[in-house]
Length: 382
Image (cartoon, rainbow, N blue to C red; front, top):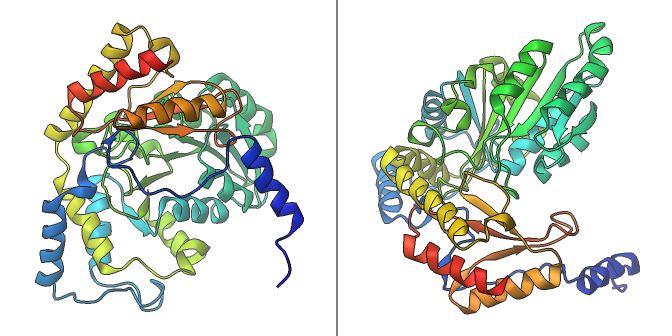
C-alpha cells in the first residue's frame, strides 16, 4: 500500500505544531464539568430499567432496526414516540433522525431550494453549516446575535425574493454550544414576521434546560407557533441519542420524501426510541430548578472571585472562560484535571484563534461546593 498522502500528512503536522491535534481519550474519573448530560439522565438507573421494561411489555426483543425507516426500520414504537414528542413541544408533527447532525444535514440540504436565501448566525453549529453547503440556496451569515445586521441582510435581498416564489430562511440557535449565550428570539421572530420570512431554530442545548418541564426556550417565550422548524436533540439533557425536527404536517411529509440523511440510513433501534420516550417522561420542573440554582450559584461565585469578566455572558448550562492560546488553555485544563475536575479545553480551529477557552458545563447533580471548589482553583490558575 502506498504511503499516506503527503498533503494530509502536512495537515496533521500543522495541527500538532499548533497544539490543536485532536485525539480520543478515555474519560477521567473526575467531577463532571464537561459533559452535556445536564440532568444526569445518561447514568439514570431508573430510565435504564424503565426502558428495558417498556420493551418487554411491548414484546420487542430485537437489537436493530434492520433497515431504513422507509423499508423495514419503522418499528411500531416510532409512531408513539413521535406523537408524544410533538405533543410535548406543541407542534403538529415530529420526525426522528439518528442524530442532531443528521437532522441539520437533512433539513438544510433538502428544504431551501435553488433561488432561496439562507441567513444564518456566524456561530451556527458545524452541522448547520455543513447542511447549508449541501443546499442549492445562497447563504449569508450575520454577526452573532446581531439583529440589526440580520435585518440589513434581509432587506438587501427582499426585492429579488418578493419578485419570485423564493424564500428567505433565518437560522439561529436558542443556546449556542460554544458560547452558551442566546439570541433575542422574540426580536428575531418579529423581524421574520415583518418581512414574511421563515425562521429555523436549533434547540439542542435548550431542551431539558428552559421552559415548562424543559420544553425549550421557544416555548418558554411562547413563540413556538411562529417558528417554521425547530430541531431538538436527545444526546444532551435527555442523556440518550437521536434528534427530531418539529414542524407542521407538510414539513414532516416533505422530509420523509426528500431528506437524504433520513431516507438513506438505517433507523435507530427500538431500544434507542424507547429510551427517548422514557427520558421525556422523566423531565420535571423540580430537577430543572435544581439545575438553575446551580447556574445561579456559578454566576455568583465567578463574581465573588472576580473572574466573571473572563466569562462569556450566559444564563444557560454552558459557561466559557476565555483563556486565549491553545497551549495555555490546555495547560490550565490539565491543572484543573489534576485537582479532580473534568474540564474540556476548546481550542482553535474549533473556535477562532485568540478565543480559546475552558468550557464549563453545569449539571443538576453538581453540588454547590463542587462549583465553588472548581472556580476557586480556576481563580488561582488564571
